[in-house]
Length: 589
Image (cartoon, one colour):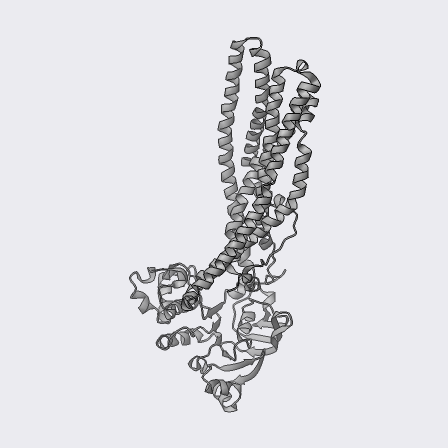
């Protein structure tokens, strides 16, 4: 497997970072009271930070030089009191914000997951599952740091800088300007490195997504990997992806690391300039020792937030890339959705009509070409033909997993585009070759077909497809816990449970897409009676290769190259000695 298979990420974004940050902050609006408390705490903390250098100035100029140690003791007591309160409030602030941001992240993840469920098959057809998981898990996790530090770092440090500059200008504008001498150097470095950092952290996120996609795919196909002794090649590919991720990460970090030297140089330049101006330009005799010490503290208070903001900005560049990736998915509109003014689908009788329906998955590559037919309620229709002929596409359009490009799909005279998707699919049952079983009990998996079903209804559904007997032979019967995808059961047993789930939903239109192809002959004989029972008085579409499954169909449609080229009963089509006859004699049906 080539590494290049995982090199490109499907989503790209040109959204401004400021827009992304504002959107992130909207998730804090539901917690206005808690955020207001945090802001009040931060206001107190900023005030204490600004007052502390004044305590130093007052201690030197007003008490130590005058040898007023009683007053100095009182001043120290006041300073200790306000700083102890400051420490306690900082702890409270962190606790509140941790709770708020975790709740906000939960909301974002819920919205993302809910939106993913609304997206149509076309979205998932072209995107590896691992990359989607990367958005839901790692990218959303990265947002927690952004939300916390936007409130706990960006806002208080920005306020701190404004307050400190104001105080320094009031105390002595000459020393204040000197204390900011290194600021232009920092601004130049930020402007120079910002776009480069953002670009490289986006690349890191993409490489991380590639690794997640590869791991997910390889674990899902581990039996194939082992069957073909492909562990070595798989490891080589994985190592290549890890190397790409490592190199992109190191490159991003190297660029990020350029910020700190500029901050350190700017800090040192400002300190030197301030003391030079104070001692040489203004003159030591024109300044008190206290004010020089206070300005020395203010320089630290001025540059420390800048250093914090530099670190935060580095993280912001990285994590905003994650936010962009999350919002790109959330902003992807579903192509299959309810239009304005749609109505509920009434109880389905089962008439299905195609009127000159054409469809293609890719532009210029038609899968169905002007297909027309009319199915009466209760008819069993078999669809046969070579692989890729368009059989599954027909039933996908009936279920409205995709929309026809031209023509109409009607059920009981209702265009499927004019009724709600939920009311349509609620009355349909779909069985495929690989019916998914969830982790949980057998009972829960069957109940998925009807969430309010009683235990008696669940057992009745299982009995109707002859699944009850093998279930009861398991140690815990219906309460047997299934592993992921039902591993531990045979393919036939998994399929029988899926049959029971579908029967429980009591569908008006039933679709069996290669539903018995994974069941051995003995299991198929067991389930035939159950299938016959659920097909009775229901409109059904059966896609199958086994002659035994489709022989009793009311009509058989032979699909080839996107068109229905033959139609009739099993006997009628054999008599014509056309495509169906050839498929039958070749044992392809």
